[in-house]
Length: 284
Image 1 (cartoon, rainbow, N blue to C red):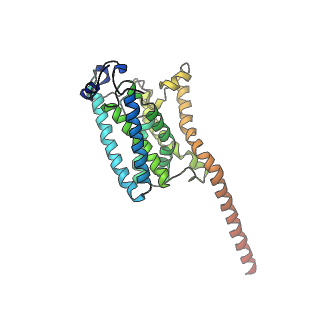
Image 2: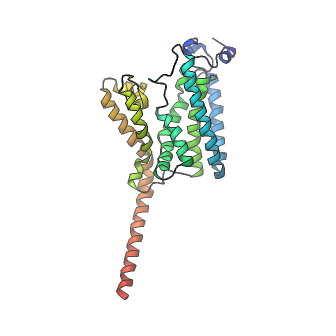
Image 3: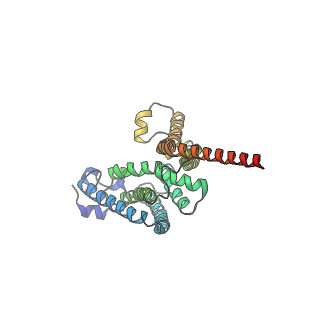
């Protein structure tokens, strides 16, 4: 078993050159990882409560968060390109074209966007973004190779922690909630950004690179377990349907309870106005 000195000395070392993960302190579900992540999540929740209750801080904090994530994303791509045995940009799997990568588009849309795209960004963060954040915080895949005290692991934890932080701030501040939807077409706004990302993702997936961006080819372990014998194109269709309809499930209860009532009240109000107009016209 290695010690913390080994971990710190290899903070930037690529996993190809490290000893076996079970010999490294801070890998997946080891005591160091559990303590480290517990403190990290606690800080996320406390920070989100503080910012969420002070609306004037939300936009400045989100701006700082966006530019920090942008810098870190560039850093991790460069690190991945120069630290491994094969040098150069990994077009097959090293580009930011995964479900969680959409957060890098959603965040500026929340800060500066308007209309449908702003609503789509909120929708992504509160649905697919939340799922991606929770999966990667509960089971940080990087920690199957690296210690939690390493550059790639800390990058992953900070990124997905930022996604969870964004989700909490939005809900606590009530900038957007699951009951904001009053029209049935708005149920599908959260899938707009994944659909945009699917275009470059599937261009590369069905190119000679044979990538699996956005997991449309089903090579993600859970998807592969259930669809290992299914043709790639059929898996792609299934993944498209999941990106479209999973977010709907988050908003559907709120729409049924509040959106339906809102539309009924609206219709009733218009009927009253129409009847009043008719009565006034008859009197005249």
